[in-house]
Amino acid sequence: MASSSNKGKDIADGSSQSQPQPHQPQSPPNPPPLSRYESQKRRDWNTFCQYLRNQQPPVHISQCGSNHILDFLQYLDQFGKTKVHVHGCVFFGQVEPAGQCNCPLKQAWGSLDALIGRLRAAFEENGGLPERNPFAGGGIRVFLREVRDSQAKARGVPYKKRKKRKKRNPMKSHDGEDGTTGTSSSSNLPS
Image (tube, rainbow, N blue to C red; front, side, top):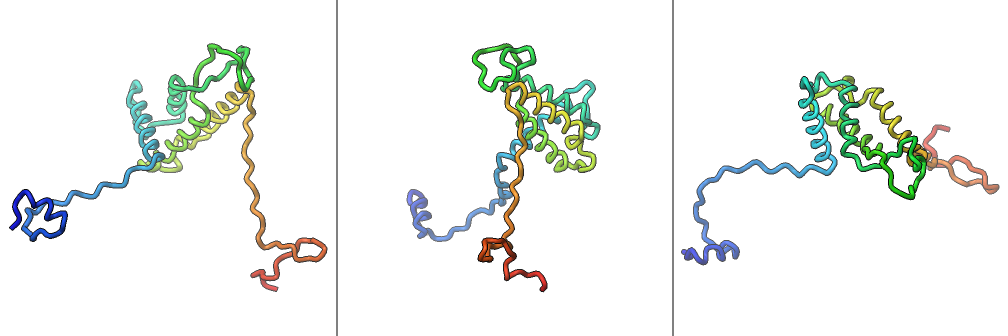
């Protein structure tokens, strides 16, 4: 039998005699850590629900409408870090303003858009019906479009929607001697 001082060494070497160990209940395996997106979505959902609970009177998520969401988005502006120049500001419409001004800091459009996307998904994951999802409402889309446009004008940068690239048709090839494009002879279409 190994002495207690050598017990750890024997176990590490694998040379220990098997001794009965008291049965310890197995703890359930830890779930894998959440992705950054999932963590942010959970945090956003909890923040929004807390915002609703703090309303006077408190609002249950099932009673939430677009006005509550719009109020929440405007409430978040106080924590924003994006300078949005107002119409009377000398820097309105300038991409690189030359100095400081007293225009307000707000949430950037991209941040609000991403937030709404996460809350929209969280609503359905927490039992909400897709057809009753207040985050998917037209009023929210209009608000986000107005924020996007006003922030683009204030910065002097027009928002350009990215065009999707068309996929090239792999069935077309240059098999004509004159450089014309024809269909491949290995087509699966019936003759």
